[in-house]
Length: 357
Image (tube, rainbow, N blue to C red; front, side, top):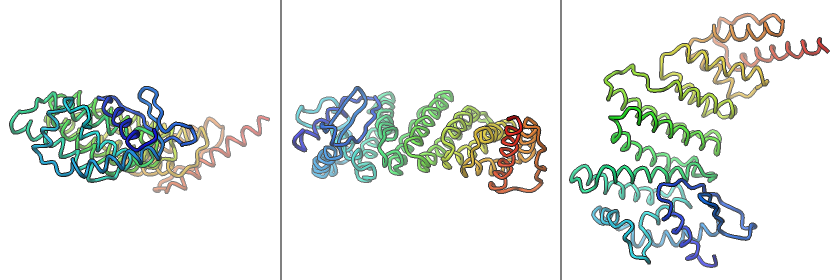
């Protein structure tokens, strides 16, 4: 890959053949000896090769894509798969630009206009079928998933890309609002993507903010469709998954705050109590002192009135050690005091073990 044209053409080939597959793209060091590696859907490219492809893509974008009108964008959509062999599909140009610079607003807005050219004609003139439009939107989501779920540090936490994803999802929610089960499946898929992005980029505020907006939109669509404001929208399953993820990433405050958000979405005392007990028992069992977890315990306890649940859990744990429990608290303790209570438990366990030896 000696020239920018080689780098550009190679990326065009990979992205053009992607269809609706999700790629995992990684920036590789030049010391590997090759500027480009591919193993199925796993792609590795050096920063230099990506930069070369971006420069060429940007030149084409400014010259050919940026001046396109709505009618020209729609004509481009209709000609997908029928372009001349020497002409690169327009949407691939912006995919390369966003791969290099995820905050390139002009390229992202071009993709919005490109999709709107199809959406507006589906709504007004039926020139595009619902199936074709839905496939376009799904393909755009898989492209963004390739960015969000790849080890690309900026892409996993890009406000531009998460905003673009939510914009697309809004149309899919409207198209599927008559199928409540489909909406729940859609939310589950989006949660998995957010949790993966959270693994790749800890404390991923933008990803979890996106998920809050997704949940709010889907709940509203489900309740509007069912006519029941109290209908169960599958929060329990989401809480289980999020709490499990948080316990595997206990330092991630963004995940813990999202867990509190979900617990607040449904008036279910048992669900809230079980979540706090699960987290507290984990912390006591492994001796976890990190602030994020104990902030969750403190805020969830105070927000949902779970002081009794917390005291009972501590009593049970102290009882197992044969020690006396610290007196139950009648005030709203800050997280440091809750941690101090846990430290007293650990001290009693340590003392008991030393007595046995």
